[in-house]
Length: 100
Image 1 (cartoon, rainbow, N blue to C red):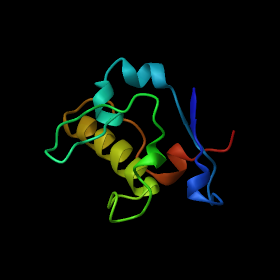
Image 2 (image 1 turned 45 degrees about the vertical axis):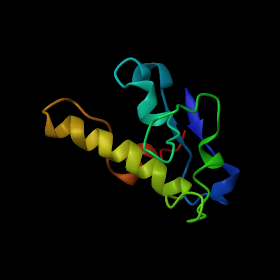
Image 3 (image 1 turned 30 degrees about the horizontal axis):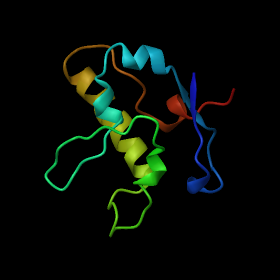
Image 4 (image 1 turned 120 degrees about the vertical axis):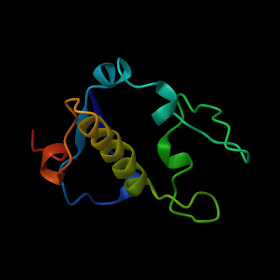
């Protein structure tokens, strides 16, 4: 189980998101989440590198801040699954940000 808890996000207004990495890794290519794109859009991978290294909120370095990157990544994938008629993941805030 992985808990998305980054100090870079500051004080959280909602509970941390927890998800099963193993379950996701079984159906999603690693590079979808573990990505580091070069200037030409080639995915170099970023295994072991914290998301916040690139998703800083500094538009000069990366225009997608960390919180937005998490939301875009998770929700867009869940939306795509549902559009294909496949059971997808949660889409509403309280479905991901649950109290333990």
